[in-house]
Image (cartoon, rainbow, N blue to C red; front, side, top):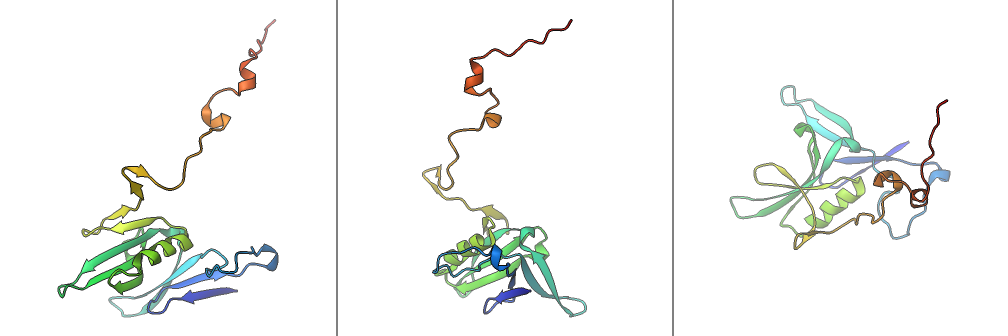
Length: 171
């Protein structure tokens, strides 16, 4: 059985299935997110020529990322929006919009975390720029491992360096 969650004010429906009791993971009691990863997003559109309303279920793995965009209207109002970015621009979907920018960064990061998608910033010309955190040119985030596995290092293990490779004799 598949259950869905709809956010108030949007037409996006996040659908996720319920696991069997044996597969259920126990989490902290204060984690308010869905217990299972989100699998599909239902996009509702109305066809231009015929006017027919359609629903398209798009797997979350098909989306490229989560983008945030801001715009200033002619009246001087700042509007911020979050959209799911798809390789087909027709399937991009706005999931959050607000006047101002009070909650947009938290919502943007939350959508990216819950859907496990990278974050993008939508530029004024419509291009998507990848988001990265830097302090004085130093990248913050996941640290790379210091040691490499023997296969990655492309060398012999240390204990084998003391021994010479055997010679194959042909008769």
